[in-house]
Amino acid sequence: MESQKKPVPASSRLHVVRILTIAIALSAAGFLAHWLLWRVKIPARQTAALLAIFSATLIIGLASSTWWPPAWRFASVWEVLHVAIFNVAAMLAYVVAYSALEERSPSMTILSRVADSGSRGQSREELQGMLVNVSPVEIRLAAMVRDGMVRDDAGMIVLTNKGWAWANTFSTWRRLLRFQLGG
Image (cartoon, rainbow, N blue to C red):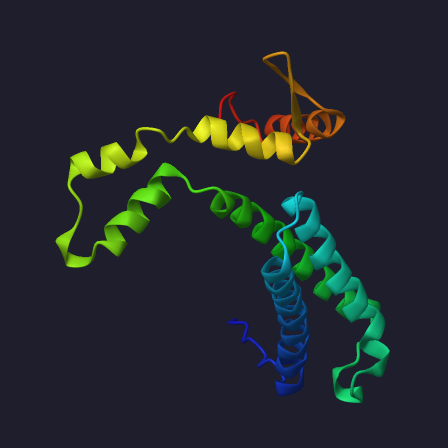
């Protein structure tokens, strides 16, 4: 006997769309707050600032939900949890993407330069000359020092407590996922 799928009621689809709309709106509000604050002054600890902005936006949004129009208010704890999980995931994904864009990688530098040159393009020699003084390792080390992950101790790079916490977190995940050692 063939089992037939029951059609999803329209009210259920609207429910999902409503929750998704709320979650996206809160994420967009966090991004807008980030964009406006960066126009005023870029903070020294950008990653921490992004986490604080997106977390505050989520908390304020959830706390203010009692003043929303009745059709948009949360009906259950599960709806709040869905919005919170979506926003935390979006926040962490954005922080990772932001850290990659924060300092230009050689690949992004090449792409930008070739795009800016239009149909003329760039010769291999021009691109190599442009990148001769770019050290991705130095750029990342400077960002890690700025963010308090490592410190330069008489020429030796040493993990701070924050760096140890992140290193242990990554090591634990690598072991759980059975990843090999390496970058």
